[in-house]
Length: 196
Image (cartoon, rainbow, N blue to C red; front, top):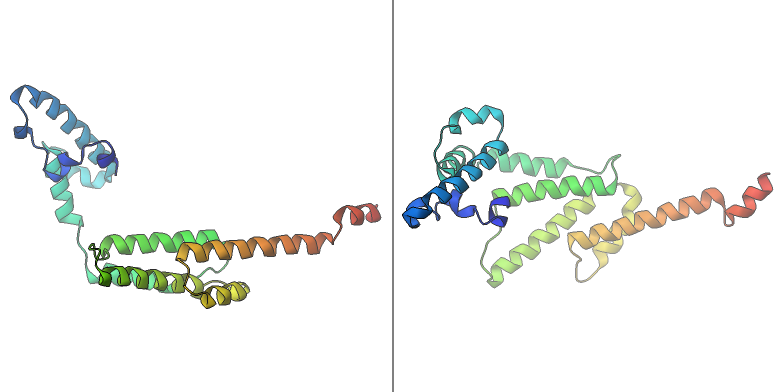
């Protein structure tokens, strides 16, 4: 994203080569290539530097890293599914639980992206995948959120997973307010005066 944001992606994907510029701009291209190389080298672990330290172009480093690490195999997909299936709220907050789940979903989508076309079948797949995410989120919430879960599942049309998260957070806030009122009573100031 940094490379795209700084208009340097062409140096790593090979679309911006030194030969595509006039010869008097080659020094400028070399300087920009060196900057991108340094960004790449600062982004990888020190154990990988030996294999890329003497590369002359960002494109060569990118290709080398791509060949070594851009492998989608069944074991990583399996492990991600397993992590998602085993993840539950437990003693963590809803926001921490949802953030962890969202990280796993994003990693899975990076490995196996959704279809890119805008056809009806692709849109149906994306909607179906969003509903599955919502089910995964709701399934492993603590039982104290059973009422919120039931209300969300009864909604038609189904809310997005982000909307479901917002509803559960709202329910959590309401419970927190009710518990605080219960501890202090209906009129906390009056009860404090009576205790004195």
